[in-house]
Amino acid sequence: QVQLVQSGAEVQKPGASVKVSCEASGYTFTGYYVHWVRQAPGQGLEWMGWIDPTSGDTKNARKFQGRVTMTRDTSITTAYMELTGLTSDDSGVYYCARAPYTSSSVYYDHWGQGTLLTVSS
Amino acid sequence: DIQMTQSPSTLSASVADKVTISCRANQSITSFLAWYQQKPGKAPKLLIYKASILQSGVPSRFSGSGFGTEFTLTISSLQPDDFATYFCQQYNLYPGTFGQGTKLEI
Image (cartoon, rainbow over all chains, first blue to last red; front, side):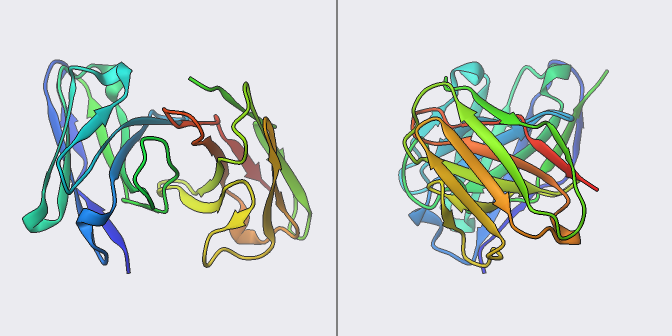
């Protein structure tokens, strides 16, 4: 069965960076884009960007331009999302999600369990 | 970006009730709308895509309808497991955007 397993909770200081991993299994990793979505405490969901595991091409939301980097390692079927210049506004849960077809704008049929990020001094 | 507005924000209901949640887009998204269910501390779960297509494994008491700017999610007979928060998402235009959520509570 399709599974996306994310790395564990993180606590970071303002100005620091965080790198979240998302290990995929149960399907052909290179066949589907991986998107990243975040959820601030008690808030809705916000799309951050996607990576094409085949080519490594990425597209990020304007809001995160210059602060987010998405990469992948196909040998271990894992996608990564690194966010720099953290502020308290970046606290929340970060999800990776699989898109059922290749598009910038798409729905998500499988999600990781989420990674809680707390930014605090 | 397209704005998605859900109503109500909170909905109180009982087991066996029929409930409807609304989602409105500020411009036409044709039928490119998905619904998700999220329970506390869990990831969202896809229920419906393309406005009315039930995701595999989702109970048939869930249904979706709508086109253009107005959409609804209906649960025909609430079960205890259905008490959760529900989000709509448009994916017609980049970037995909989500509604703020409707919390369904007892």
